[in-house]
Length: 127
Picture 1 (cartoon, helix red, strand yellow):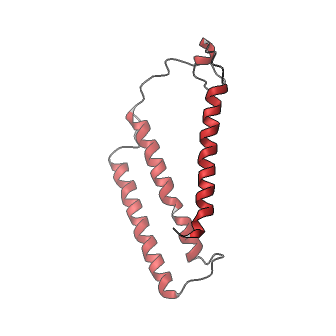
Picture 2: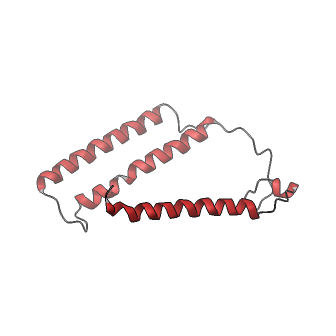
Picture 3: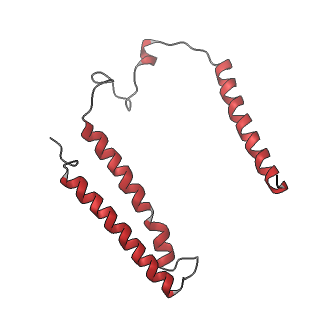
């Protein structure tokens, strides 16, 4: 093993030991006194309405997952814009710039096709 990794492994070991020690200590020290009020779900200071195990439509989960997917996909635009528009890293050559532009256009087309597909399948319709 390379000697350069010893401090990193040492720090990782300390972090793992600290996490395990904190969890173990919290289980040893805590006092459990459950009451019916403490067992109720907390909803922004409002008294709970209805059952906490109420069923939601699958559309809710579909829209939530689609939001996460499209949100994460658009995060990939930030490094591209930094390089393509000449951020603090400096400018790339013209051949590289053309490749970056084509690559991002293909990415956006794939993203747009996925959005249209989901739209046509009716995932955004709330019935």
